[in-house]
Image 1: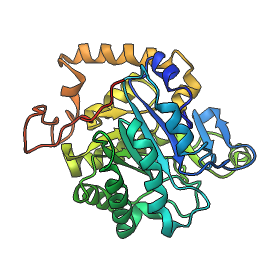
Image 2: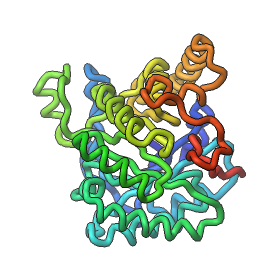
Image 3: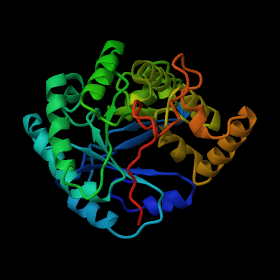
Image 4: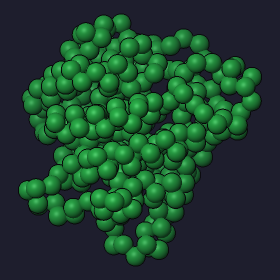
Length: 318
């Protein structure tokens, strides 16, 4: 939502515990022309075809460089539209070089349906490995450790999700953000004419709820606490967020529900989560992560050398 890092402070003041800025591209670009976001109100959904509008990594870095009160800021980076797919590594690396010093974590967005060819990166293991290795090499020069995550889409086949999870572990990624928008919506309540008039793009919001949970459950069963899992897609209520945490999410994100719910939405979410936590009898949300999975909750001993930390360990304080 905060494409250019201009209002993460305001979002945190409303009650969000962290903000993910972006998607940011290395070079400034306008994104797609024309109407770029359309509401499908009956479905509590949005059709998005923004196309990564961005003022560029250098401009965003300058905004994030100053003191801030937001507890944590992640930065989501994507491919500049005019850059060929074969040169994606260098493009992502340029963004990482500029933004990593000011990021509490970095996300490689390889799953937006509005940049031609981009989603090929998440399904082609050799390209993905090359991209991750290039960016990780760049992060080695950052002034503090920066966790590296991958954002995947909901339209992958289950076998592809398994393969991405396996490769993320092999590449020593810190986590996965799941899921992006879908180009294969099903079961919409909006009439066909309204959907047609909305046009092409990625669908977000309530129609993604079931698939977002399915992908999260599959990733947690596959990877457990070896990956930090950030769940997004169709989270509207405290119960939705609690369900994702219990299914294995360390962090939860929202976009469309905030658009429909307005500025009091994060306050209501926090109040509701606090109530659900009290009712559960658990001492902390940390204890709830993965509690309904067959794997069980994460290892909460952060000093254990045999387990990955279930939280993003590297944070920047200013």
